[in-house]
Image 1: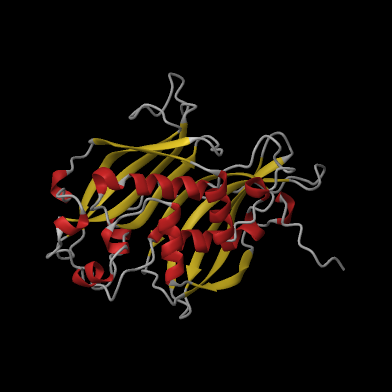
Image 2: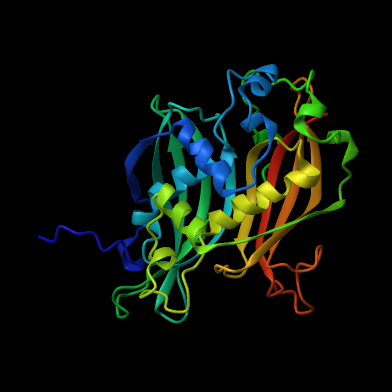
Length: 342
């Protein structure tokens, strides 16, 4: 019996299959330090215990996206080890903050399958939950991945494409227990702009750019135990190691601080697409568009729906070409909800 794990191929999945992912990991404050070393992350709620406590939380949580990376990374050996690419996200919700000392594990269920017309690959849809040591779900999301077939002659499964929400409704969002922005300190947060200052349709150029280096990308994939071959094995992808899509997401989110410093907590992920590959040497820039606004019923807390676009140094506010396809310089198109003081 073989002792090593070659990973699952497209024909190894079945709708309804439940995947319990190894290995649980206890998150420490080292996670925060490494995350802030990798990205220019400066949102106050994730930088200061005192600031978080003044906002009603017991302390500063681990960055929402850092927690996402931990949960995501555990799924890779079972979902995307043999992936060609991660294609998209939907119905993502952050349900509880993650704090230093929490132990996270991941469970996924296959909810859809569709073989591609070339017969060499197929798309696998999974719904993943991240749970803490108390078996509380701290986050959940759907993603779909293009996966290679092991046997090109294997019959195609019945096509099942799940119906997914185009966007979470404000009622779907969960505001962390105790959060209160009624005495929010805008000076310490770094910008004066509050929820009421943003208008639907407004666009924001985040100005700054960061050139992605091979070393930081490799540190990120190892930190979050993302073992997908396309990210670290040049013999698997001779044209260059593909930068982990989550690395682009976190970099763009960190860059968005300039103009959205008070968009503190990510609570919903409506959709996302990795439009084009990113490689070491590319310079990531970002811009945002305000898609919607909602009240939450929690003191001082509003919700802002944002489109976050990362580019390879491209001009801001240009997303698609004349044919309606993503421009070649667009790396990421992410649609999310964030909590902001009103």
